[in-house]
Length: 243
Image 1: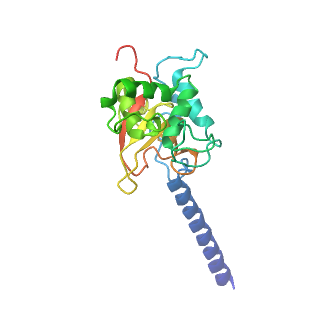
Image 2: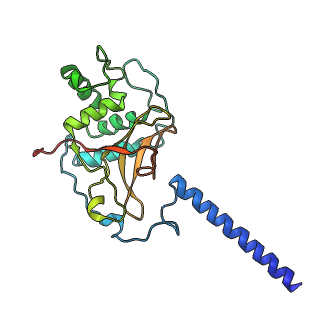
Image 3: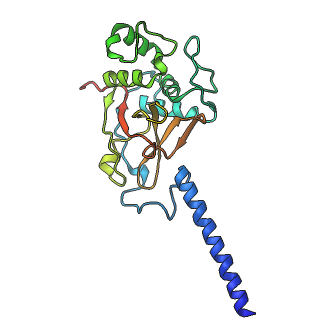
């Protein structure tokens, strides 16, 4: 009887362990688990000690830096923009509760006082040759919602930063700050490029989360380095005076 009980207890413990491990792997892969037995050892100071090297610009004079305004604008979309819709909208702007990855960007910039649509439309009008996806006449109803157009704009008017992310490397991670913009290469399976805002939330190894919309509304998750295509751009808006 004792042997039966021991075997039974062993099986229960084994099943419980497998459940815990399976749950942990699922959470890890979906980005919801970043502090666990699956996390890399901490070899750098905690995330709060990663210095913020962003410039002290304050375009809308609200006492908060552009960088923080843009970050806050992105976070404010979480729970508001809850669906994904890439349709063409007359006037350009989609309803508040929907949009695509590019809509996270102009909405975040709006919080810092920037009318990104107007800035982009004006530059397209004056420099159409700089925007390779523009065919014939500009279309203000959709141009600002196209990733290639945003890339062209940020290449001209934002700081271009490293596209390399090195976990546990303080010097590298200091270059990745909340409010930065990151772009990804075209996905061969979908034909789509991607764009998002870097979060101030970080994993234990210092790598930031990403605020973006890829089908479920605006979310903040552990996809900065897990997105299926490579990072091709990393920007901080606007350029500094010495650039």
